[in-house]
Length: 61
Image (tube, rainbow, N blue to C red):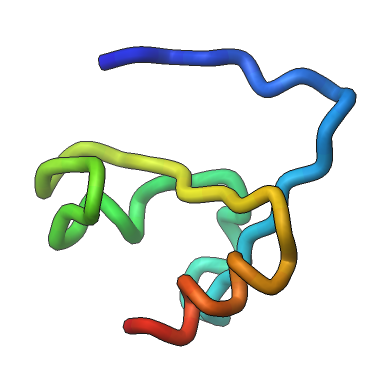
């Protein structure tokens, strides 16, 4: 696993379903079934540099 610090100089976007809104920086939802870059059981936080890309990713599910 590679862990990288996200600095304060950039803004990242993420759309959340109401189910996960109380844990906005959790990757627990991605851990349920796995995702594009994580296996089931492994949390992952998916972020986007643009709000439109974050919305497009949210809508694909």
